[in-house]
Image (cartoon, rainbow, N blue to C red; front, side):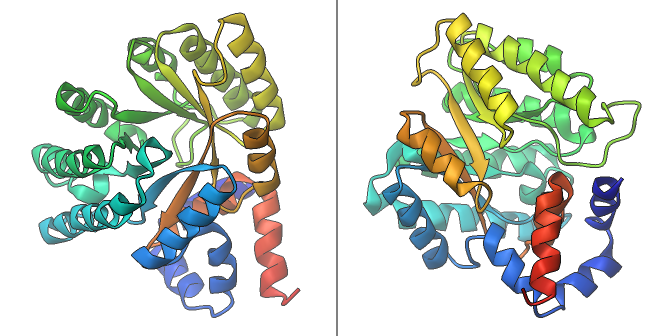
Length: 305
């Protein structure tokens, strides 16, 4: 119930103004967001790399219906990638892109062109792009854009949200050679007509999707902080003959950092989802909705503890 309330609040302009204007909010945001500028996120990336962790960087921002804002987001990604190029991080530092932030709601072709520009900049670094998945109304468009991008940039990945009823079929279609799929539970408020609603049902759907990806020929990116799902991932990897280089774990910046480092220390590839930028509100509210511990952290900060 609390999660649904927070997801609803993530789309509220009134709540956005209240939360964004509260001085102590910044203290909590800093846990989940690696700064607002390229130098700040660059420093965060270097710290994570020193700890043996890979990264995928998200320039924060969501749906825009302004062509200028869409172009500006694409330019921000390109500037970030150019800043990272001298570091020669290769596949250890990729980027994640929300297509709604580069014009998907305005024109699918515009979003494709902006995404193609970002893919080109990533390829120049020896790296790649993963397309984030947003609410269920964007899935078909996102998968069409993915198919087009993979013609020229075959390492382009995509996120699939397990709580959608369609996702098992999507995983089957994507479990092919060269495909990269980030499997997440899902972080948008979706109706019961298209998505599982209970935590138990979502977990079961996640395992079914994970089994499909592990049994396939692609590269699964297991995005979870749940120890049960991590254990299941290990069992499925063993069952389908995958070595530790044949899949990876992904976790959020600022969440379970000890677990991230432990998995990396055991020889796993662990990629941290690193958001940066000043348009942090929607991302921040979804992180609170996902885990009660995040809400408790927020409340303790507001209380000055």
